Image (cartoon, rainbow, N blue to C red; front, top):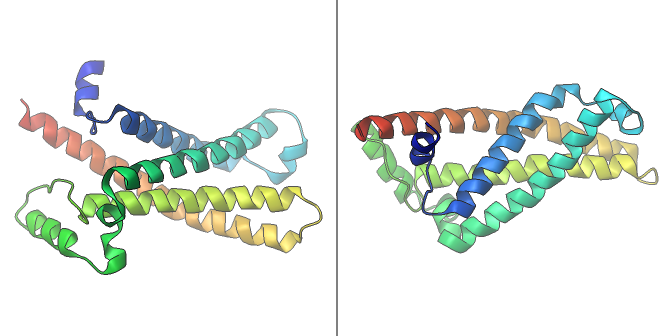
Length: 187
C-alpha cells in the first residue's frame, strides 16, 4: 500500500523536493489545526495552551526556513520565469494549459503554465504568512517597539492565512485528483 501511494506522489525524480514538499504540507496542516488554540497571553504561561502557542510559533519559523529553502531550490532548478512568467507578462504557458483543459486534458507542468504559476504563488504566499507571523512575534516580544506595529503584523498574518488555507485545500484536492487520474491511467 505504501509503495503504491509513493508511486502516485509526484516528483519521484527529486527526493529532496518531495521530502521538502511533504514536510511543508504537514507543517501547514498542523498550523491550520492548532491556530485556533493559540493565545498571545499563553506565551508567558504554562500548560497545554502555552505549549500549542509555542509550537505554532516555532513551527512557523521553521516554515520560513523551509519556504525559503523551497523557493531557492525551485529557482535553482528551473529559474524565475518557470514559476513567475506572469510577472514579465508572459502568459503563453497559462494560455496553452487553458487550451488543453478546454479539450478535457490535464496539462503537464510547463514553463509559465498553470501548475508552475500556482506553485510559485503558493510558496510566496507561504512565506508572506510565515514572515508576517514571525514579525508579529518579534514586535510583540520587544517592549520597546510600538504595540500598534505588532497589531498590524498579526492583522496581515490572519488576513493572509485565509489565502494559504484556500491554497492548501485546493492544491491538496488537485493533487489527489491528479493522483487518482494518474492511477486510473496506470491500471
